[in-house]
Figure 1 (tube, one colour):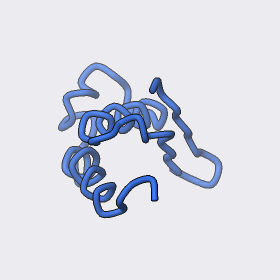
Figure 2 (tube, one colour; figure 1 turned 90 degrees about the vertical axis):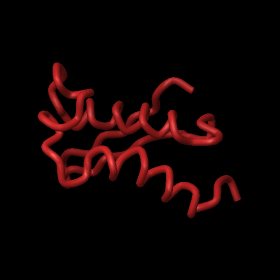
Figure 3 (tube, one colour; figure 1 turned 180 degrees about the vertical axis):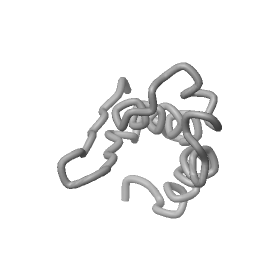
Figure 4 (cartoon, one colour; figure 1 turned 120 degrees about the vertical axis):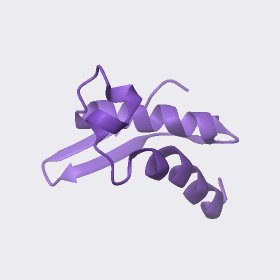
Length: 79
């Protein structure tokens, strides 16, 4: 086991859901005040948020956002 799935869920809830769920990303998330909320930029934001809350951020390999069948973004930021 690389990471406890419950811990991952808690990290995702804190880093992503509490920050972005049911919000106007452009208006309610300060990160996007002066940055267009493209799928690419959202993936970078999610990467950065997860890195901040994970006990072992080096375990984060990639962020994948599946917007539509034809628009899928993979982001593998700096370790």
